[in-house]
Image (cartoon, rainbow, N blue to C red; front, top):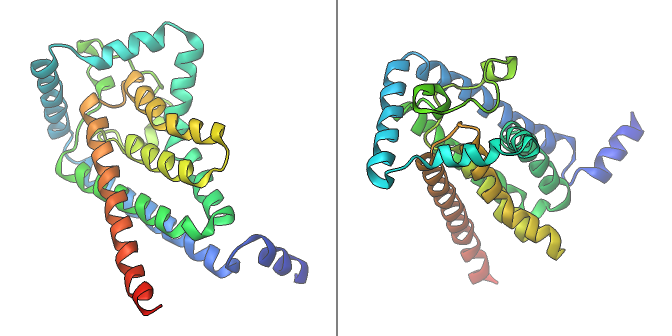
Length: 244
């Protein structure tokens, strides 16, 4: 037991209690998300109407559905299609959780700001899902969209089916990219994370999970969250700086 406690003190910046607190925050958010999903699932007709509205807006504005172009690019290569599907399933959870753990253990001084930015972006996204539930492109096969990640599987069945607007995949990828670009020390890793958001944006569109408009809304959500959390952090640091 003493060995376990000592190992925790060496690895965890603030010990087991704080680490458990961070886990509780994320579990609380997860169950809150499930509650919101329950509200959204009660009105699928509205989600389909909103999805048709997005399609109509893009057709009137661009005279073309860019999502279909992205799908054709992905379909041209089995490797690219597989990579796109893998990215869709893992960017929002696997990569995000690994980034949170990395920031907590290795860049702890930046962790709280990163965590708060992700939480704020996801809270804004949840509000969007309640106010504007939107059926994703893959639900409109008559428009030529193809389900690129097999939502009929067990994993797909657990996901919120009407959470297209805004795209939290797009928002979280941008936040992760910005934070890891700042946190990494090598040029190649900075280049990797600078390109990460763009790759995720392509993948969520190419797999017919989000519209171009969803991605644009997700980028806006990320910028609002980044700007708000940064502004609050600076406001809190200002009195300390003045005293010193």
